[in-house]
Structures are given as structure tokens and as C-alpha cells.
Amino acid sequence: ILDMHELVTYTDFLVLCTGRNARLTRRIAQEIGFKLKQEAGVLPSGTEGASGEWILLDYLDFVVHIFTPEARDFYRLDVLWKQAPAEPVE
Image 1 (cartoon, rainbow, N blue to C red):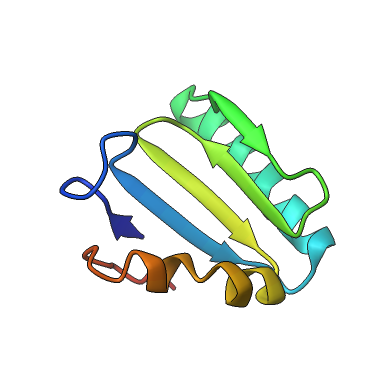
Image 2: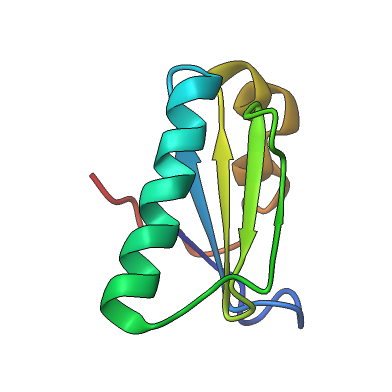
């Protein structure tokens, strides 16, 4: 989780996730959407990436990026935003 408060105005946090393959990234996105709707009544304002290589869920205050390993290595958002304070989550 990257704290973006001091770096951008469009969101407070970026959540970066990796699934082993496109099928798993789609499942991770489904589960995140289900849990947030069920437990917090929150729906994304937008979604992108139905192919599963890179899925984006925009919840405004936070944006979730779910990558395959290859897409995460290619886009390297954690390197692009290396100045953002990071909190790893296991």
C-alpha cells in the first residue's frame, strides 16, 4: 500500500497486488469488490482491465491495481512512486 497523500490529488492510497496469472487477478478483483460491497457498502467508481493482465479498481480514496507478475514488472508502479511511503501487507 502506497500513501499518496503528499504526491497526487486524485487518490490517497495505491494498493498494488499481484496474482500468478490473469485468471487469479480476475478472481482477486472479484473478491475485493465483493468484500468491500458486503462489509463496507462501497462500490468502485470505475474499473479497467477485463483481460486480467492489469486490473484497476478505482474507489476514489484508494485505487487498487492487480497485476500478473509480467505486468507488474513492466509497469513498476512501486518504482515509479518510490518516494511514496509504503506499507507492505502479507
